[in-house]
Length: 394
Image (tube, rainbow, N blue to C red; front, side, top):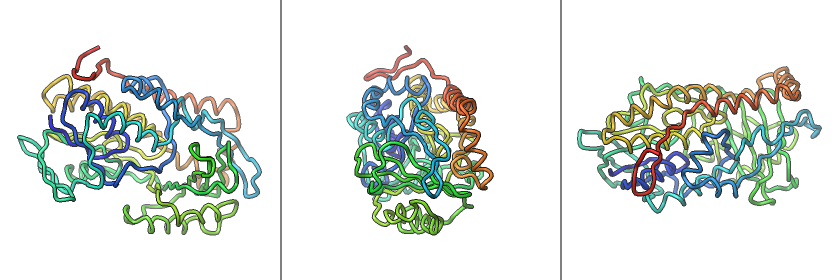
């Protein structure tokens, strides 16, 4: 088949790798001019996720790039430790920077797929013989299959799904991150400073000790802004954190020079059906929840299942139905785990104190780690394997 994949972050390159190996003609289109370099670390927990990475042939390379995670030390305005969570709490079994993950997936898939950066889908017209696609660049092509792997704010979903079939729920928080000079010499723990409804964090950069990575989370209703306007997003962050103590003013001083900024709402999306006749959603585009819901691992597994089901039958409708049937229940459950905003930035001082006291006890910490592990095992890994040049059951 002639396949178009929208999005070159995680889900897109993952499905491109599998479909390219199976012999399909795959093009991946990405609105960014190149692979994105920013973004926080992502982790994989449980045998299901690592098994898929191993079958993709990327597990060992990712292990060579793993950050090892960093402990989370919550501090007051003077820097005094209030509570500390061990590295395995945030890092899982395998933690890598999102940029490194995207790079590895791209490098392993680019021999089997064509990548088109700096372009995006402008229009879709689905008919019996294919999907006519017009790109923002003016290029027009027809594809047998279009896969929307373009994240929570999916262009494919917006163009191809009626609004009444899509429900986006804002979870009352926003998250931001950017790179700053490591003037404080941070080398081990991530440091986190809370006030009600906000947290400012800084962590060592695992690639360059001269740099550090920030993570800011704040409580807010739905905000109107241009997703392509970095200056506007930076101003929103500054407005919400101006006047705070600790190292916040210094971290905000590094914001104007940031060329790679991650900024998004913490939200989740529900789509009544993940596919039409020739268009299908993958990862966050169809069942995403930003920040804290195993989204990265679920996207990788979803790509494996979608490609595997397509390898089993020439009928797209049947393959799409099987793909959704295998993943719908588990992804709904993992989406419910997207409570990172309330965990990172409780809305009240009482909430902050209660969180610190509860997680400072080994029993409760062990239970939370067990819960995350159990969530990762909700996805049943199908027994098929898509191998180069063939599609067979193991």
